[in-house]
Length: 395
Image (tube, rainbow, N blue to C red; front, side, top):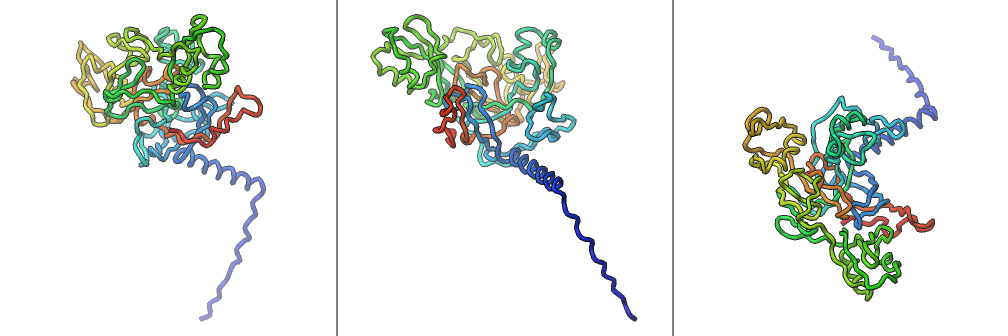
């Protein structure tokens, strides 16, 4: 029996047009860049002076997602490279119709004390779109709920779409933090501010005839110095700047200028009238750790109410002096997540954990690695770039 084998020639592959090649290349680049940005490394810009002197306005950083483990996107349907708002339209850059539970890939290390960390703003869950500088909760305290909600467009944001900010980790889960006379203590051990940060000092001069270039050369921002009288100034400085300043014979004294412990700022965490704290004197506060059980009473609930209710998703209410969690009488609570205490290095010019409390682990974005570019907006044409800061590691 004869068999005939028919061989059909395959049709020649149609050549891609130039337009198709460009589209494919762009799609590939966007996907690759998104994967790198989500799971490996992301660029970040320092927008404020809250981390001076370690980080300056105009510093451009790379933030590692690998060190602490990359966080799986919690709001997966989003426009690439836009955090929470579209650049032109001002509309939301994500769709919150699909939200995933918090998960994180294994990391190289845990968050350590003094790490510089990028995280989502804990009180950024609700925002007044036309006035986002103060938190929504501050607006409510300054006015009232009805006024704020009628005056502004109010929007809620999922965890991974809240504003990104950067601070230094002062306390890790289980630590006890406090501050007295402007000096932070961790687990009852004083941790004086290093030269990466600054505090206000009261500087008294022996004469008003002073060349303030001396101050500029030491790193002082002369334009921001506050003059109290002819020979007395308040200025932000590092300990080494003050030490060098004291060597000049026209300087009578230069002492730390902090608030007395009797002063009550009124707007600090946990907004408890029984805790009269200020930015230089607060605590002690124990930072929750996963698995730690806290007794629930009138003393502890002001500290841990938001963590239990908002961050860990429980229904919390008080009825007749008795606390209920998920409609059950609660005398204690065991935390499901780790928490951190974050503060800015520029201690009197930083809104940080002193104002909004603990940072939950699901808010952590990554670890700041190094500065790859730095621009000085006040520098001359040839000195716009701070060349000495390029590719400098963050310590």
